[in-house]
Image (cartoon, rainbow, N blue to C red; front, side, top):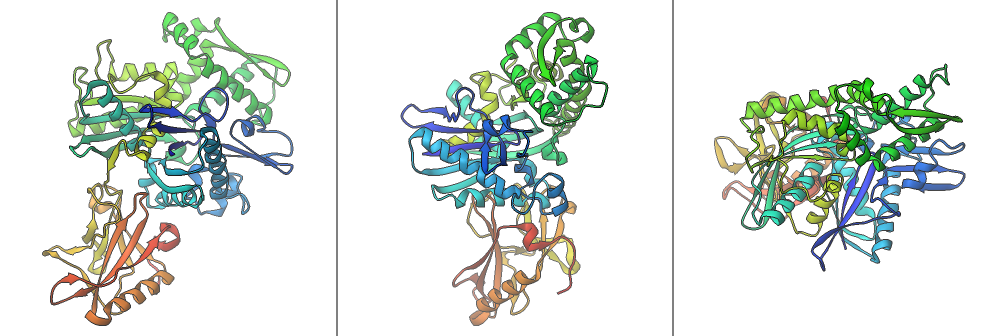
Length: 554
């Protein structure tokens, strides 16, 4: 089977495309919702995953690992130690164990033995910084190790979600979607706001470019915050403090986390009730809602009452200013770019509110207020079938890509080339540039500016050790990175091999479908001005392990 996975910071979802029905199907590991907590708990000789691990969080003798996905690119030992990881429980090892459990369980539930194509969504923020580019490489390599996975690919989460919404639009209207989609992805640990440009072509492929991104929480700030989990914890904390039962500061121990989990479950199951009550009372006066009880949560033997007024006050204090600030940033970008985001009658601009916390009534209302939605608004029409699709958009889009129902046209996640004399980034000769359309596994050679047909050739022993990498549209934001000593030697050896007959070689770059970068070396004939002979390459699985980010002595 083919499988799409949204490996989230707090929850993971899996989706397959059923060829026999032409429909997307949730892969449900437990009775009820298709959302698997991204949690691993270990101790007393046993390891627990997902819902079972979440229930055991905070129990004596057990250690719980959370938010390990976003730590995959992290190499600083002090950061990993601070987050509770050690040599035996590195984020990559915990991720491997967790995904192995999820994927094997999915095969068993679906009665299959092999995953032909596995497509996993990764945060777009992993393309924002050179230091986090390794995240997608590490995750792809983990997935490719599983013997029951034939082909593994990672794709940008907003690209996967946009693919799903474009597919929905085509099914609803019979037309291809061409325009912009503003994705407001609010999860348990992250807020990601992404503007994508979606263009369909006659060959059935969809070109999806990420034009702008902003956000808060773990993806942007390195720790869970300013999102759903922070909201739940803040509500529970304030409710305990206001109860009067506990004069001492509340410790965020296992009992507190269990109370937060219970509150989260109550909010999830009570969404329609929450929506109805806020519709009835409005959102202007939290004090009026203090007399309306939402639920009671047990904490250390006491019943802690939580009112609708408390839900609203905490939202206004903790979430509203963060969401407003990030929406304002994106609106500023769209205004500067001339994108008509406020036109309610157009079909070329859509707004999609996704993620588990994105379905919360107060978040929905703030987005509606910001963009002044009306009853006849077309900016959300034809891209969402049912409300629950919002939370599974990434895994459903990934499933469509895995089954090749939707083909995402490829664009470069960064620019790469060689700097000019004196490491001058202003005179960089690029192999490809950020957001250029590229073909996966095709080699691109930096060319001389004065002769675009002539790739740059290197003589024996003259292999470069400095590269320019840029993941923004402004050239002066580029960085010079330096290949580490052992790889400089390897590169020079390959160049020397290629030089045996022609005295020169060309050095190029390619990206595979998951964004893994390779350096290619081929002999270059100075007389024919053509690259000839056998291609040799170095696969750069890790930017941080293979490059220095400051000059080094060779």
